[in-house]
Length: 415
Image (cartoon, rainbow, N blue to C red):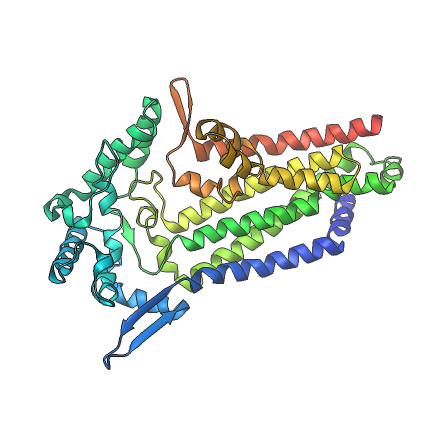
């Protein structure tokens, strides 16, 4: 234990580690605030003056404007919203909300606009996927809103997974378990979730910088030659260095993520966390999660991803004798999932990037986007949802790379 504490102090006292950890804490607060600035509303007051609201004032205005929508999203509410939308466009003689006079959308449609989310999507042509305009949808058809959601889920999966009946069946089972009616509470958007991924990726980079020199710096300075001569300078020393690095990185990541979620939810309002993710993303998303559950699931998955990436970084650190080389290789692997996702065909990329240690917090490959997608690993007659693949891979990789790191360190001694 004393050796473990000494190693923790050694890492935490380095200037770079202190700077990165403090900057991570700053980013947690800063990133939580940025999505607030995206909210803006404009309306005309009683005196005919245009009023522009941004930030928290805009969110409060939106919550007041849509207060009647809070709660269950019933088919009756959705039908009424579509009828009101169609009546509004007919009144002004236009076919699209983009053609409405200035200020009309904000004043007449915004109060119920969230209920229109997903309506066009679920009435899309089952063969072509082309969605009709809201003016082309019969309000009477919306009485079976959730039945139409399930039918759209079936037709969409036939397009997305047309060669895998197993994936279609698995996805349909998942969607049937989604709680209906959906819940909606005004004021939230997908932006805070996107920024949760951005800060996770940045902290991953910081953790990589902290972990990369753990073994390599001792190799480079020659201190390792002395340390290996001590009583615990082999296996126990390697395990101690690994565990201390993992503890520092996991604690830093968990603390920053906790701060981000707490600040973000406090700004947007905790009631928003009860909103079904289907009301923010796609109406046919597969998981039975609300926003709060999605935040926690993403955070927990990201922690596993970071631990897997740090474990791999430590393995690289045990292999290289130069800090610059070790750090460069580790950072390359942090962005490798993004490169694989962009450069390779989808069918090939979906088999590779999910199992790369840093894939779950990639800006384009994050587990959040996998949760909102419909991708599966199809193996024979079985289908595994991509987020489950990613989580399973990280759980395997953490102990695997720890063992390989210890073995590599011992072999380095033998050489």
